[in-house]
Image (cartoon, rainbow over all chains, first blue to last red; front, side, top):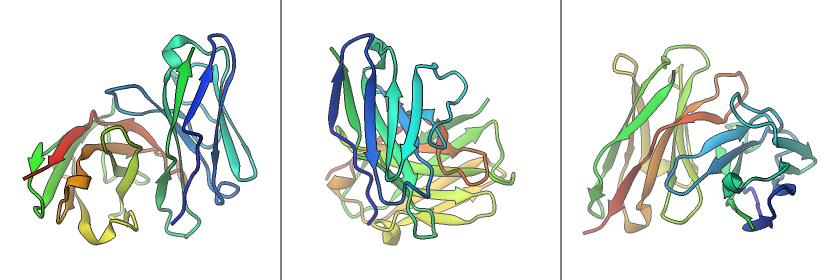
Length: 109
Length: 122
């Protein structure tokens, strides 16, 4: 079955830039989505269509794509950005099964 | 404004069938392009997609769980129902329903319910 691979954890100091990657064979052809999830809360969409930002999401969140890897970048990280981040896409099977990555725990030092 | 809310039992016994209802407002599942999905998350673990139903009654299921899942809609009640058969303790999780982005070709989820924790135990 199709998988999206994320690093389990990343850490960054306040004010620095955090980059979280997600790899998958279908990503050159399928869009990626990113979700932020804080403890005890439902996920929140922060990036869609690889690099689009929903209304209400701070400009410090951005997304990019290169080959089989997509990247979520958080510029000027704030303490409130500490959360789990999940990438999501669909497979290339033609039936568009949804797939989530394993999640990355972002720690703000 | 779009809202979704999950409801159903908090405790089920092994081998039983789970039935969860997602009641939503702010959109219609009869409108072209609209979809509602179910996603679950075991305690301390990652999100796992389960199923998705579209405005035209097209349905998609996780390949690994397809034999156990059924997703249906009731457009008059603004509800989507998910049933999962033969429940096992490993199915203990928070179950979320979510609204699919209403943009052609996109399969992301822009609005989520609060989630409901389902525990499987005898």
